[in-house]
Image 1: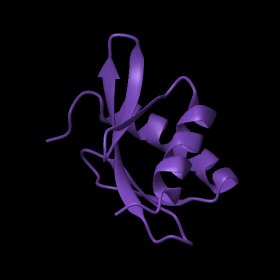
Image 2: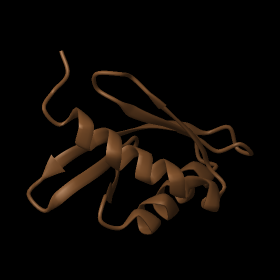
Image 3: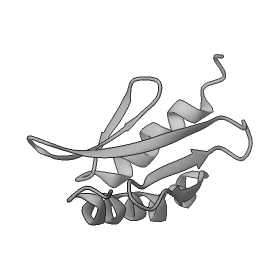
Image 4: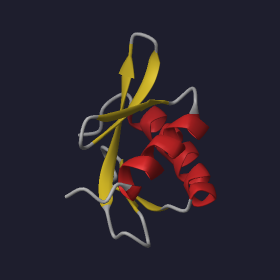
Length: 90
């Protein structure tokens, strides 16, 4: 069953997805009831899944390992994702 936040989650994930090509990343929205964003770097092959959740200060994007970004600053979040997926460490 979908949560009450499904629509808001989708809006935030779609907004982030629109900014990712500008930093050289590719993404795909997956999941109907609880959407997530699958993001990958086409040159390094590194990938992650982005979750979004409400927090006291707005909405947060979360990804592995230990990444997070604000839905209020999509450019900074996109840059942080690019940096995380650029990293050559295993």
